[in-house]
Image (cartoon, rainbow, N blue to C red; front, side, top):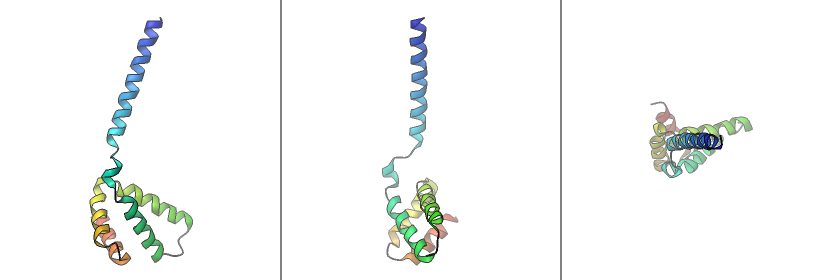
Length: 103
């Protein structure tokens, strides 16, 4: 009985390990999206500058939405390019980001 229990535990542990590897292999490495924190900070500041009366909830949603979308391969290269070419201008950055996510 003890041998059976040990075998079952090993099977369960192996299964959990394989599931974990599968999940984490789908998660991109942080370095892959290294400009997201700076790009989202710039985007956040630009949006708040344009909308000074935004509520705390709106600001929080804005931050979370940017962080989520920036880490999607579909948008990252566009966001990175916008950030690199328009760091000093909110208007240019805003227009670039808006155009990029509408593609």
